Amino acid sequence: MIWNEKIECASRDEMAAIQSERLVKTVQRVYHNIPSYRAKMQEKGLVPGDIKNVDDLVKLPFTIKTDLRDNYPFGMFTVPMSEIVRLHASSGTTGKPTVVGYTRNDLQMWAEVVTRSLCMAGVHKNDIVQVAYGYGLFTGGLGLHYGTENLGATVIPISGGNTQKQIQLMQDFGSSVIACTPSYALYLAEALQEMGIDPESLKLRVGIFGAEPWSENMRKEIEAKLKIKAIDIYGLSEIVGPGVSCECSHQAGMHVNEDHFIPEIIDPETLEPVAPGQIGELVFSTITKEGIPIIRYRTRDLTRLIYDKCECGRTLVRMEKCMGRSDDMLIIRKVNVFPSQIKSVLLEMSETEPHYLLIVEREGTLDILKLMVEVQEQFFSDEVRVLEALRKKIKNNIQSTLGISVDVKLVEPKTIERTAGKAKRVIDNRKI
Amino acid sequence: MIIKQVSVFLENKSGRLSEVTEILGNAGINISAFTIADTSDFGILRLVVSDPDKAREVLKENAFSVQTTEVILAKTPNTPGSLTRLLKVLNEGGSFIEYMYAFSMDNNSAVIVLRPTNIQKCMQILETHRDEFLLNDEHYQL
Image (cartoon, rainbow over all chains, first blue to last red; front, top):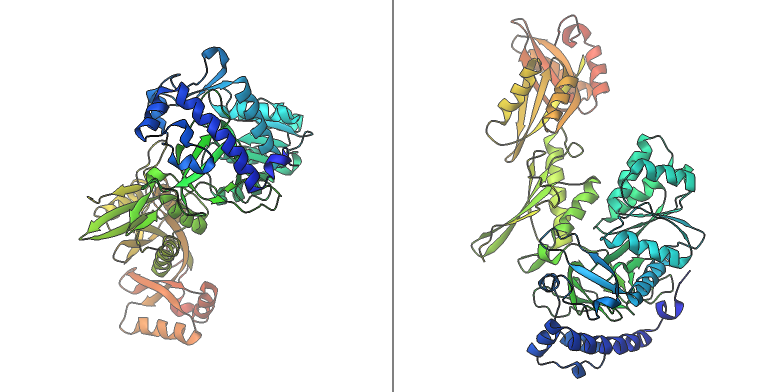
């Protein structure tokens, strides 16, 4: 089912007209209400009247995460606190959290985009949706919660953790949809296995997974282990939370709710828009939000946009699964290299989480790329020629994916440093 | 006789081999024979030990990549020309050897560790020369 067919299947011209009208209003509002936006626009010699339609979006200055931090906590709200009915905040692992405020209309809009997303995923009002995202300052739990209620499906607001209880309710309540992080989905699958519960005995049929990057291989694993369709949902609290975009059942990219959030792809180096279909950094502008409108927010997520009509009938632009972060990107011999691409090559070969380290050196004027790959048990062979063949295969596969050559060195397990949380995957020894 | 050989992936770094032998020694595992296949970057250490399953376990606990592989232990007299005779028999039988190494059991005979491509086929050939080449538990205790 398509929740809002008029919008989700609109022609490009119709969508551009909606976006233009809303963008113009948003720019006026931020210019007149938020000193930091006004200062940035003035720096560029811009007044609100310069923004006449969506094509003028590229003239506007960018917003980055530190802008939100600098105005902590409420400095970028465009309405008085009496209009704000809810606050959410990011986890703030790298400093102060970023705070977002929602008006009543914002919450309605958010519920609408989550409802659309649920419909894209194939959820309908007869479903029982177990929301196992955390409830709280994090947007995942409450975001999915109100979207589900808005759809008219049944929500189980169990929040995250407590795996035994999750499984018990799945069995007793007959949950047909689970919403959580993809890694928790895998954890649930393992717990089911340990408890000797056949996933076929559950009513589960769809999983809505987001809030962290996950690969196609992980999707296959989740789908096989839980016997469900695994759908990717995307969002970030700075824009609204989950529901910024979501896959439909064709799993061919996430449909962006672009009548509320205009996506752009820019080159993270030059900050210029890339050619259509090219990979670059995803940038969002909110055009209906009242509490904290955001203009050209640099997400740092790397992806590309697909403007073709989807088989599902929706015309909403699709974004591919994020391919990494622009802050990770390396330029080696003029080629953009994302460590996540190397990860996917290794994942394809071993089907388990690879441990690797990429080292970039400069010899003379030439950049040399070295890749250390841990020889996990499933890689290891007793025979030299098998290991040499493996090394050659990794080298060839990476060369054909990245278009540059790489020296591959096989190393012992646990020799690449593990850090709690984000693993260090790249060492750039070049002095440029 | 067919036994389990233990193989360990080693980077070419000083001190790695002694770490392996120390782990095995502490676990009370005796090494009868070993060989190292080396390349410019890494080596594969192959071991004949008293308790291969336990060896694998303790090495895994210490984060080594370990495998056990079936290999054949054959014997030849410790005299000039004996190895040639064994190899001829295998060659005539059509057995292809991936790798092999040897150690001496006592002054009279040598033990040959064989890793053929087809282990069953190689055993059949050796069976036809049972007394001459086949090693069994009576002859040799790991």
